[in-house]
Image (tube, rainbow, N blue to C red; front, side, top):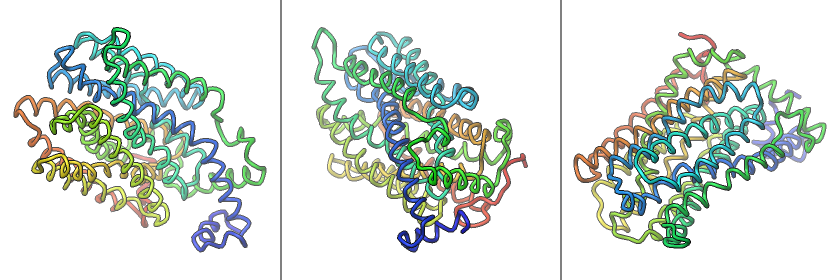
Length: 451
């Protein structure tokens, strides 16, 4: 039986009579069980450590005298360091291996995240945020490359979705945890915000040690797979590589390709909006005159909703074999949400609109699965790094731009209109990429050479 024929059997539910389908199901479950939990925890910690400054700002800005422009620039400069280091980081990753390089990333960012408790001036704020971004740079695209070396195409969006839910779960847990830690104000002579940075920074160091000990480098090291499962996985991944449009192993091939740059520009606009939302959300909610704890609870509720929608969209994208519409719909919804948020009054209606905005992360699994279909081998690592480095620079532009607009206008309305415009542009660009496809969900353009 052809190695791809098991997809049809799984779709028909004929698992009992098809040994190959049973092998596929058992193998993917084993991959989910042994690889994703550790990577999920690492990404969850990363998202908490990069965004906890948004909660710290509820006290820190007052204590240190930071205005909206200072905070917006300091929150966003994390992504300058991140963007500058992503491509070099993934270049090294391919050569030294994922296990050692992920461990280095986790250990260095954990130390720097905890060191944020020493911030006293705007210059130290800028410096530590920049270094934290540089330390973490390369982790997310590195994991995407790593998952592509383990998961077949037909299961990749779900794997990415499970991993990516770390961001939504981080929002859910981070809100409650931040509200509690800010309540430590005055303990041992420290304000609440230094406690927040210290307690949330150290787990990354512990995870770095676990990654170094537990993360397998490639399927040949997966001794927890049965021989028949390892053979099926090896054959299936080889078959997928043969069907993907780019079979080049050149790292530089992706960096010079215009399609990859277009994907990067699309995700840049999406990330500009996403991190404007993440890093300003607690202060937007504080405008409803609620306590720090209630701010944390509302953000946590958004994180729970985001987690559910993100996985559901990724799984549905895999079942339908379609990426473009599944990536575009979430940003079209959030475009409407931003326009509504500028007009609503009151916490109840504002929270309902924020629930719509919570759906925006669900574009990530189908978008990254689409991107992975363009690239294989070392070119995938380079392409992911380039796309994500362009995208994460949006993490600098979004918070900084929102801070400047708030300072200039004294409110959020102009910023919300601009963010809605960006989201509409993202949807148009994603749907425009469909012209490069040969059939639903798979691009037809050969990106192995620039055009």
